[in-house]
Image (cartoon, rainbow, N blue to C red; front, top):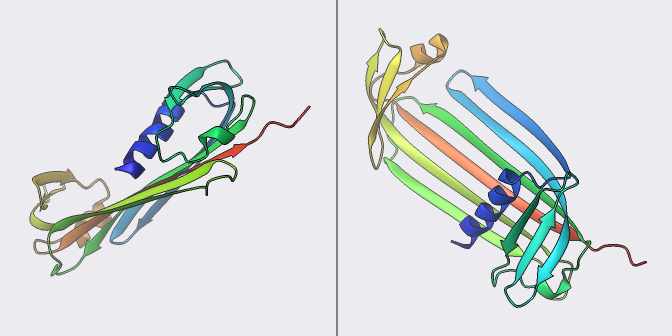
Length: 194
């Protein structure tokens, strides 16, 4: 749960448009039996105010947009934060779907997550990550609509395959393995002493 709440913090930071500087790199994979995409986003802001009683921090971007976030107990170095400190956030997410010819794997959903934060007394920072893997059976193919039916661990879905060459590779009895990954890192750089 910690990793999810940390990721939610990162997403809130990104959606608020707080970034003074924002960069994004996108990656795409398309090869026989595998498709995927990923993105890495880097955001920057400055701490405008800190409320020690509520453990809330207001971060502002160069364009004046602000967001206030609450630092949970996993933020061990809250006392180290200062007004004017620079906050750098890196967020990555990717998905890869692979065709497993002939199947054989257990239809399942697995999830792994983790979080680490800076040791007490050091510069504030944290990293969190999560990986979700789902394996499903191909139970039907429809050449007319170029779609397939996949029975997963929780539901059955129909998927339109836009690439005709990829569609030709898929047969009933095969499996699809989808892996979703997200990771975030926060680094705080203290403001320079005057």
